[in-house]
Image (cartoon, rainbow, N blue to C red; front, side, top):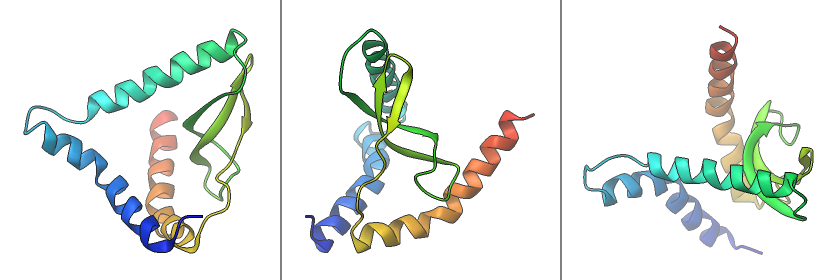
Length: 120
């Protein structure tokens, strides 16, 4: 398993990843290209799965019962019908569980705003 100190270091690096991308561009743009790549990767994976490829797994932010939040990002098994199975999060170490609990209020607020916007 991952020890707590490594988990904290990885988490901090991941939190800063978008900022690092913007800084690397030295004012020449944002991290939008990364989001576009992620969207394209998911679309290509979904098309492959819908055309018969087996064991296609990609992460995506979907309506879910993995947490007590209505939407969450997890690995998904894709198939001919789209999302065949939400593979969930697996077992979290203490640090990960604490981080999840800390971010729930912000994410829940963002989900509520997104639903409100979509229903306008």
